[in-house]
Amino acid sequence: MLEISGKHQDQSDEALLQLYLRSSNLELLGELYARYMHLVYGVCLKYLENREDASDAVMHIFEKLISEIPRHQVRNFKSWLYVLTKNHCLMELRSRKQVRIRRAEIKKELEFMESVDEMHPLDRDDHSIENELRECIRRLKEEQRSCIELFYYQNLCYREIASKLQMEEKKVKSHIQNGKRNLKICLENSHARKEET
Amino acid sequence: MPERKKHRTINEFLQYLKGETSGRERHSFERDLERDPFVQEALEGFEQISATEAEDDLLSLHQRLARRRSRKRRITWYSMAAAVASILIVGTIFIQIYDFSPAESEQTGMLEEAAPGEVPAAMDKKTVEEPAAAGEGALSEDMPEMDPDTPPAADEEPEDSGPAPPQVVANEATEAQMEERKTIQPEQAAQESESRGAREISAPPAAEPQAQRDDLEEMVVVEAVPAPRMKSESLGRTAYEEITGTVLSAEDSTPVPGASLYVEGERAVAISDVEGRFSISVTRETPSSVTASLTGMETEKVAIPADEEFTIVLRPESEKAMDPSALAMRKKESSDDPDQPEAQLRSAEPSGGYDSFYVYLEKNRRSFEKDTAVTEALVVLRFLVTAQGKISDIVAAKSPGEPYTKEAIRLLKKGPQWIPAFDENGTIDQEVTLRIML
Image (cartoon, rainbow over all chains, first blue to last red; front, side, top):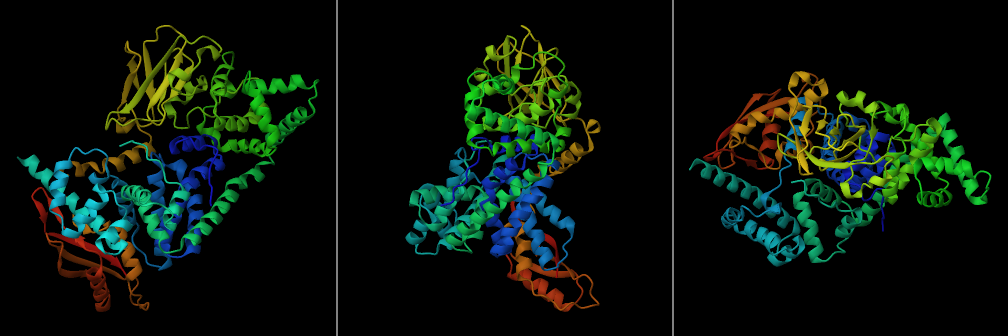
């Protein structure tokens, strides 16, 4: 079993990042990167679709990190790294197929991505809008509703839901995804209506 | 919002992939997944390979990273100061092993700088245990790169008051911090045996505002630790008071880390931590105000209220006073603002966002034989996304030729669902222009 631990385990990402910025000691940045390397690798696998390219990309991204970090004010390292990773993968895909998509478009996407940080009401811990949420859940399509209820209210895992509802795990995930999206629209609409009155 | 999520370790991740976890553990992992697109996408990637492959790959990646991390070490051995530092450390080891009493004065002389009292014991143990420490010492010679951003407080520190701050930290030091001390120490020994290291590694970071640089050179940097942990008797002089507080942003009341705080007439400077908290020791009995500053924010001088804990709110600086980089950042942030008043409106977009839509296009587009007549196969489609999320009225506003148009339309139709635009009254029809490169 893989055991990765650093000297600064107790330090938050931000604290470790600051230590690095003060010292330029690559060991520190490496330790910080190691915390999320598996995620970076996973995302690279998703986009690049093969192990070798994904592994190389993980190392390239580390190099990119070294050069980019001092130039940005990184507030949340993890989400910043996420954007950097996706950015890298998309560029890679583009250069691979030798398709030129205008830089401006890529830029726009990235800014867009950075702003979608907001968490879905279902995933938040506060339940201030629980009633509205329930109301909207009731209006969902049958499959989406049962998946969301089993997952968020009965605390079952995807696998358990899949066997309970006799469907593939993949289906469960997409029902949850789509259900969440519909819920968001429903909630936003009901908010808008409230503000009007 | 700033609630700290514990990040999932690689092991938890692998266990999940291998299915070695119970239903409840799986559920809790999946809840995190739903919250965090980073984890979610990573998992989608891992689903393409087996768990054993994943483990192998991650292991070899960690080895590659470890090699990369330490590459600099060898190069920096050339540095003169590094050599001096390593000789000092080797000397210490030698002394420790053979316990030469004549050398004792030299040894303590060196250690004193880092830590008084019981600390040397801990340090000795370390030094003997891992001679690799010499390598770490060398690492601190990456310093030339670091200097521009670090207040060279230590080097120019003119007189007294020196020993205090390092002692404070050394006494409090955790294991991890000790390691850091060790790293920085030879450098200190080498280049500043007189002025003792006010450059404290655990003191906060390079985020000090330009405006404060000059002042900082004259100041001792102390770590902004919570008040109870600061032992005033370990300071070289008596601290009368501990001022603690929080720095918040005026825009959204979120904590502001990295702001410098100082009290006029006092040497100590504190820097707010990740949660915006700071604490400064002052020697005068009644300091009246604390000044906070940060690049891009208005410097704020705030009277200290009677009760100890207080809040400083920083407003963004007016644009003309900002340096270009801060200005650029701010511009970017404020470009989101025009959306604010009409937050009820949302444009139509592909489900999953444009980002994954482009990935879809990349993965599914058919390759065309490169036609010399066509240098840039750009197709611009204009179409309607109805309130029901259906696509209709597709028009090619621009296309190099019929096959390209057909391919673009095929991709659009076979692609992800579209989420209709909506305004305050619900979903609406909206015309969308889409550029597709083929």
